[in-house]
Image (tube, rainbow, N blue to C red; front, side, top):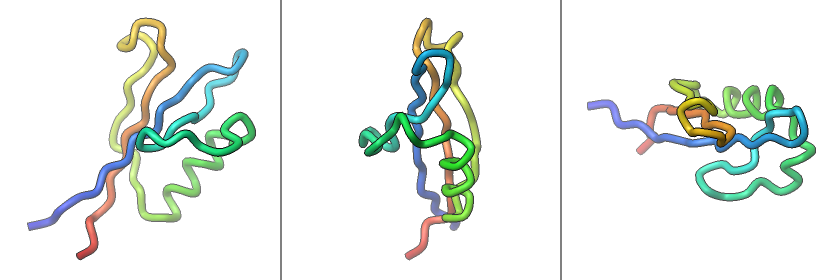
Amino acid sequence: MQKWEYLVVELTYEGNWLIARYVNEQELEGWKNVPLPRLINKLGEAGWELIGTLGDRELRGGAGHLFFKRPHLP
């Protein structure tokens, strides 16, 4: 049976920009300087597929989360 790995990216607002601050609860170094499209492309190159989002409406004022998965390699 296929097993999966999961990754969660926590987003935050910096001024009017939505940016990634945490990946799996680990704060990114220099997170204010990492454009979100660049991070998503980098994750895609590493085999991660975006499978869902949770936005600010659901979080009542928070920024949001992106959820990724990829096949688990033994």
